[in-house]
Image (cartoon, rainbow, N blue to C red; front, side, top):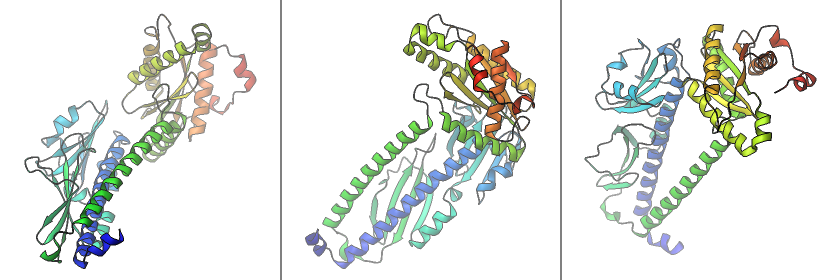
Length: 404
């Protein structure tokens, strides 16, 4: 390396500095755009029919527009040419490029309403990222990707008078792609346009860094999945359910939308394990998880609480009739046909409403637990907690006296 560095003159060093700056700016802009799209998806997924468009825009600046149902902060986004195709996709949240308006359109659908956010291309890079890029003395632009003009993606385009790095973003979008272009004025001149060995070293280093980064991201995704997912059923696990429930309770308290937590306990599951074996019991649990997902709305979350217990959070439910309808739909989905082979399985369901039966996650789970055990002991399919029941704790002796 010492011999190689000795071969590089001062102009080559200036070129390498410019190349590093434009590459860093392109990477920062790419990360910022992906973060903006993820934030738009998250904001829409947490919205309800009562959320106002202005509340959706609270975390965005610039000329961003939003609609919730028929209420819009500005123009009706349903009039955009890509809105119909985006809303028709089976995914609950879709991000697509809209060439007509030179923007990105993010659309979220529920059973009752559709919400959307329009992000002009000049608003997809966050202000703090733009400030840092400006300190690098690099110009940045975001344009729609033009497949008819092939680009040197994520590479250095050596042009007289400037150094350029280009990166394409498609992974965060469900349709279309964006092109990030970072450029810096080159005042080195023509005398050092062939840095030769240094470029080779930089290229090899970039390849190694890219491979290391890809490996790190893949391992991180795997760890995140294992940390938030129940390995047997593929549902959210206990800790992930607690995290999302606390966020949903905070949102419900802020906007006064209410929510319901249900605890579902399988009847007779111990006997299934004892007579058919644990592998058969595992297949029953997987089948039960699939039926619970099918019986719920896209906005609901079901998780495995532990053993043969499942938990469900249903945002927006505030009335006992709505809770009863949801519980009966879940019970019917579970017992309508054998779970595995000829085995029919039913469940006992306890439900608690926020804020009627508790103002925090622990209180709601305790109230739902009381209601579930009352449903099991009385032989009914489901029971809604009462204010008095929510204050009763179930002792170990009482649990032991209940026949599963």
